[in-house]
Image 1 (tube, rainbow, N blue to C red):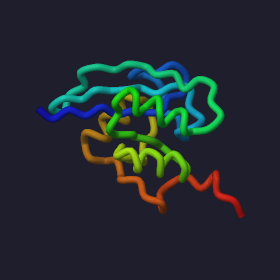
Image 2 (cartoon, rainbow, N blue to C red):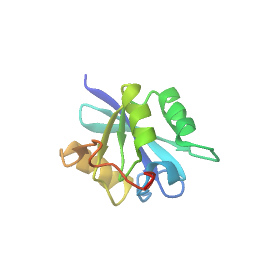
Image 3 (cartoon, rainbow, N blue to C red):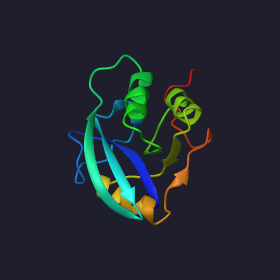
Length: 124
């Protein structure tokens, strides 16, 4: 049985109808979605809450046993932290959580690399 537990950053409360947040660290919550054999089996919200840096979000996702992060954008530090923990990061999503899941299942997302990440945290 093929089982994936993925996380998607959301604007507002996580649900299948929630809008995807364009940036990992600035989201309000994460939709934690369990997919088995290509079908959504469960979705649970995880609050992003108050945090001082993205490492707290990364630890919360690890505790939720996430093995795939699907994002619109992400900076270097959380990308490297997730990668170091063995959590795959895929990008190029927009719309709702349901649409992001569909894009992932159709193979329309891209593997995130240092070239495709958000540059908003880089210093000049």
